[in-house]
Length: 195
Image 1 (cartoon, rainbow, N blue to C red):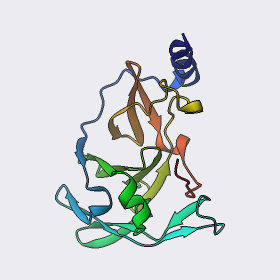
Image 2 (image 1 turned 90 degrees about the vertical axis):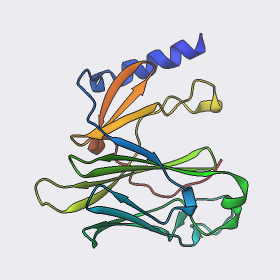
Image 3 (image 1 turned 45 degrees about the vertical axis):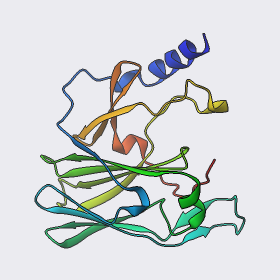
Image 4 (image 1 turned 135 degrees about the horizontal axis):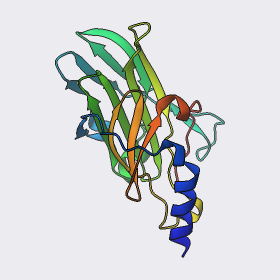
């Protein structure tokens, strides 16, 4: 009963993002979490990760954190943009859980979505895309809708990412296809906690 209610609430809230169009072709791959260092996407793009320190913002171990780790995106060996990673040199995270990264690359549009997962509960979604207006690369952090995380109920889910394109994330939730525009779901707070 509770599952159906939560599913219905999600479907109602995001009804305007439902989509029936074809999902843009997107290459999907997995990374090596904090062991990832460099990967080529298509003929021109290379993504590199330089791990840095974990920074406790209020100086308490369980409080909000940021990192000094940076992804750098190169196009034909020229640096285009960068982004902050969740992964860092702290041994605490490396010992306690798998660190997972997933990549979604749209070769036609030369856009890349990366999803980082830290300790099963902390996610970061990073989009690298080329602006049509300025022809420069931009980085966006997004937070796509997920079903309720309250009480970590079994109804909580991130959904299944099917692809990216046209400035949107294509996601399947409960058998429905949604197209969520990146700009509608910008995540401007990069501080995170774990657990």
